[in-house]
Each structure stands twice: as C-alpha cells, then as structure tokens.
Image 1 (cartoon, rainbow, N blue to C red):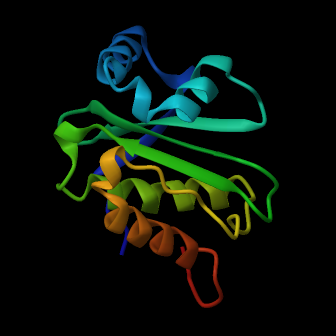
Image 2 (image 1 turned 90 degrees about the horizontal axis):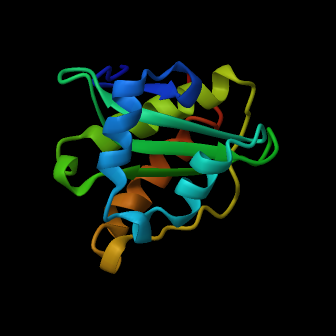
Length: 142
C-alpha cells in the first residue's frame, strides 16, 4: 500500500517560497549533501533531483535524486535530521521508486553507496536500499 505522507517535487515546479525553504533546510548540512547539492545546483538533464515535501506541513524535509541508465539508476536521498525517525525516509524511498518507474527506469545500480553522518544511520539506510531495490525485482507491483 502506498504511503502518501510525502510527495516529490522537481525544482522547476517549486515556487520561490519553497525554494527559499530548501535553501534554509540545507544550510549547515552541506557536508552531508555534497553530491546531491552538486546535482541540485548544476541542474543537468541527466540527473533528476526532487524536493521531498511533507504533505501534512507542506514543507520541504529532504532531497532525492537519481542518475544513470534506465537499467542501472543510481539513487540518492537525504532527510534533514529534524525529520528523521518519522517514516519520511521510507515514504520518500517509496515515492522515489514510483517516480523512477514513471520515468522509465527499470532497475537500480548493483551497488548503491551509503554515506551517513558518523555512520549513525547506516543500518536504516541499508534497509531503505533493500526496499528501493524490491520495487525493481520480479513480482513487485507499483
């Protein structure tokens, strides 16, 4: 069953107020977001970057991205520490998988690097990788 506690919004669809909220969200977290922020700032057509919006507050809580070929996409996600532990990361990965599939991606890379601050969330991130990967394996509908 689909969890709709978050929605993904691409940069061109964001209003100035939300863009400013995203800027504030990432301040001081640049060390956690090196690759993602590069993708965000460069706006390359081969890289898809979306803001994770909490539907209850209608506020940004993180970022997701993916790049690569349709058969081996390399996804990335980040949820601001203030919003972790609420299921928003899980919901974001679910929406990420659905959006990737909508855009014609059929699988993810065999190795998805996990980089967490102080390795604090490594176990949770590994579980999210497994969840994301399950969307692209046989028998999964969605």
